[in-house]
Structure formats: C-alpha cells, structure tokens
Image (cartoon, rainbow over all chains, first blue to last red):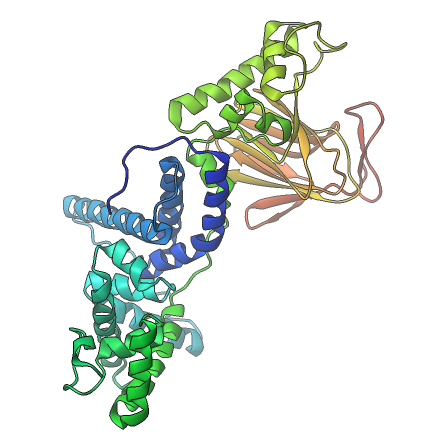
Length: 180
Length: 292
C-alpha cells in the first residue's frame, strides 16, 4: 500500500478517530489474524502491534480497514519468515511439541476438535491470496477494502472470492469425506 | 444479461450469470443496474436460481465453519495501545488546554515522549522538596493550575503538586512504588493487573480523579465516591503497594503478591466498601467483618 512514511504528531482529533476505529475494528482484526494464523496468542500480539503502528503513524489512512489488514498481514508474513528461519537453523519442527489433548476428551469435544481441524485444513489448502480474501470478506470487508489491502483490482475481487469459496468448500468436503 | 457485464470469473456458458456475479449479489457488491439485471435473470433462469440458492447456502456454511476457529479477543483498551505507541501522560480538563499540557498529552514516540514524562516527574519531585521553587511554578503552568509566578501556597513544600482532574495517568515509576488513594468510598473497587510493560497506568472508571505524580508515589485524590479504578502495575517492579489511606490493600514484593481482594483472571479486585479514612488524611480503618 502506498502510505506516507513520515509520521505526524497525533492530535486530539486523531486520538478520537483512533479510539473509534479501535472500538469498531479491533475484535475483527484479531479474529482475522486468529483465523489466518491459527495462533490466538500471535493474533493478539499482531493485532495490538498493528494499532500501535497506526497510532505512531499519527493520521488516519484513506481506507483504514484496508490499512489495518495490510499491515497486520505483513506483520504475520514477517513473523512466519522469522519462525521459518529459526526452524531451519535449529532443525526443530514447529508442531512437534503439540500435545494430543483429545485422547481422553468426551465425544463431543473430540468431534468439535475434528471439525475445527477440518476447517483449519480447508483454509490451509487455499493459496495465501484466496485465504486472505475469504477471511477478509467474512469479516465484512468490502470489495474495495479487500482490493486495497491485498493490492488487487476491485473488479477482480469477486472472481477471486468465488474461486476461494469454491476451493474452501471442496477442500472441506474432501477432508470430511462427504459433501457438506 | 448484456454480455459485456459478464466478468472473467465466469464458469458458466454464455447466457447465464457468472459465479462472481452471484457472489457479488450475495455480498451486495453489484451496482444497482447490474444487480437488477442479475435478479431479473434469476427470475427466468432456473439453473442460475438454483446456483444462487446453493451459493447462499455455501456462504452461510462457510461463515459457520470459520466461526469454529474463533477465540476470545484479548482484553485490551485503545488507551493502552496509545501509551505503547508513545503517549506517556494523559491529562484531561484544563491541562489539555494549556499549551504545554497539550504537548505532553499528545507528544508521541520514544525518547522525546520519555523525556517529557521525566520532566514532569522531576519537576514534581523538585517541587515537593523546594517550597516556592521555580520548578513548582513551572509545573503549575504545565498543569494550568496556578499563576506563572508568585509565592507558593501554604504547605506547598509538604506535597507534590496536584494535577487537575484527569481520567488517567501513565508514567514510568521507581522500582519501589506506592499508590495511595486519599479516601475510602462507599462503592467502586480497585482492579489491579500486573503487566509486562514498564509503565504504571491508573485510570478512573465512572468518574474523574486528581493525581499527584512523584517517581516513587502516586497519590489519587478520589473525590468521585463511586468510581472504580484500574491499575496496571509493571510485573518487574521489585516492590509495590496500593493503599487506601494508611491501609495497605495490595502489596507486591518480588514475586509474592497479597491483597484484600479476590484474584480473577490475573486481576486483583479490591472493593472500596468498608474502608474508611479518618478526617486526617492517611488514617484508614476497616469497618465490619474482617476488621483488624
């Protein structure tokens, strides 16, 4: 996104706008990052860091929601790269330490866990761009906001979104073993 | 359907609505004329009407499935992030209207903001020990509370200068910190949370309070009898106490924490109710059951 690199001194009016945007968008941004990363602690950190960066910017972007999504998405990408480098250096598998905590859980918990795993798997099966488009749309972002956040043309968003929905459904059904 | 309106996402033969048109219809993203055209087409084309119903059903299912992944968001406030973004001192009321007070309230970022906070704290400390000092008068100007020059009020050397009523205050404390509420209250509570950030943050909820800043002590003139207060204390503080009058209601020493209230999800809630303070400032006693 093309944004002015020069931060400005926040004024009272900006702080009011900042609070309003925070109240309206923080939960949504967290949910977007949580769904995108599958890591709620990381999502919490990155959502907060995104708003800290907005405050330091000192002025409202032209399309605030798109700016938030773009910055948060870049932060997540950077974090992934860092984690991948760390993993390559140490040879440690990120998921090796995860506990299988459903072995003694009640049936409904096991089922819920499996359903979450299928949704996660279907999301992970999408190309990164389609995954982000899909998740932004289900946060209520407009095509214009999605286009600005992901540097697409607005007219192409509908096409990508249709493809993403179809791919998600197919992947889910494949994991589920039946049309869902 | 005019062929020119068919978008590149089409997966259907000519004469039918494209997938992206059906998605755009569901998302409310088609222009009025385009939407009208697609709706008219759906009324006459059973194939597309069925595809549209399928797409709407898929849309609902995807929303439901994605919701399975959700977790509760963190409990964080805009002001806390503004503090992290560089804002160090938040003053309301007349301080916000004085030029220097406004600069303090809005001064952003890093070293400059830290310097501003340190200036306030240093001025407060100096004024506390030097009656009539230029520092005291300068702080009065910063806080918009008094004349720019002239003799200090009687007793000015006994306490640090007071800020006007403010919703909250944030500052970097000494390793040994005391937060003192001057009065007991019939209602409200003090909610204390240990945080990782280096700043102390105190905020009145449901009322204003006046704060007296000092590097090792924050005095809260809690005149709004029903307000509650949120305190964020750096977990790295070696020692911290919260008092209502002279009664210590919360204490942290190293890793050990004890207090009068209940711990809920990492927050210690200390009710004001029952703590009274004698007319002499700082003399507190506990009424009712549990009185020492």
